[in-house]
Image (cartoon, rainbow, N blue to C red; front, top):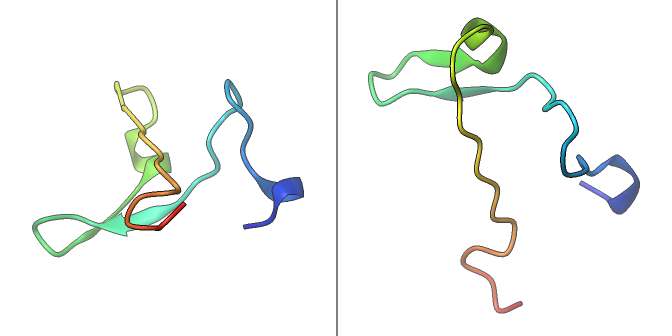
Amino acid sequence: MNESSAVQPGATAPDFCLPSSAGKDICLSELKGKWVVLYFYPKDATSG
């Protein structure tokens, strides 16, 4: 992701899907109306 397409703090998160621990994909859009915590740490496991 380049700087111009990065999500800014306070902005609505774009929809995305990730595998759950049960092996089923779950999408952010499926959680609409529920409490969700998103934590981004782009420098994880890097030298920066």
